[in-house]
Length: 294
Ligand SMILES: Cc1cc2nc3c(=O)[nH]c(=O)nc-3n(C[C@H](O)[C@H](O)[C@H](O)COP(=O)(O)O)c2cc1C
Image (cartoon, rainbow, N blue to C red; front, top):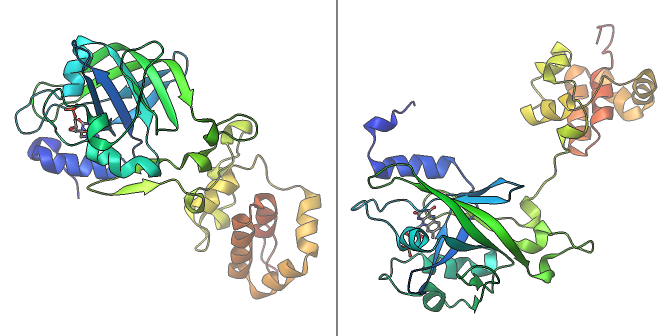
């Protein structure tokens, strides 16, 4: 299916965009109006866009029903400061409650049952229950359109970072597993970064992976290996040396697989890949089967 956004109504377009571009982190944005009244709202059109200067960007969109601006946007135009707190699993129901369109001037900290902590350098308070909060000055607000559904990019420069020490590891770094962050998917779905759905991929930046195109054709075209398997193999810097090829050849497991043929060797290599032994897996894949050249 191929779609042209010009032929779609805003609701459908939102559905496709927000379901496909996910999971999205959630900014819990606290702002104040010119009279100092506090507002708190979640935004999942949000991310970090620069390290130095440290820039967070989020987007309050104009209301679909009448194109009016949300309180957060009005407040930022009056007082260009925001405190962004991240959202973890323990806070997610109250965060959703805080997204209710209460009348202007309503303090959603009170409505949702959160605790205000005064900022050090900006006026909007932070959410005490959040594990990490960023006090920010707003450098710019870029309007992306004028009618309902149009985003407004809030370019927020971080001036203070507050961290609950309970989410630090022994070295004082943030610990993803302790943070237990949640993210927004399409519709009413959220997801949670728990231990059983986190996984690691070695950074390609450390080495110059040879690339999938450098692997022999019978490996690239394997019916057994997946795209992820090929990605991990292509991340190796070079084909295995003679010593590793011989080590693989000497193993009884490899001999048994060789005797059964190429598919058995590919299956064995896949198991090694799943155990994180990519070099050995490639050495297995390069074993000759019978009299066939590898
Ligand atoms: C998890 C979550 C993420 C949301 N993300 C956005 C968003 O990125 N942009 C937006 O305009 N509204 C978003 N909303 C809806 C706003 O939070 C909602 O319209 C809120 O009432 C705006 O409050 P305000 O008028 O006080 O600024 C989100 C709601 C939830 C629950």
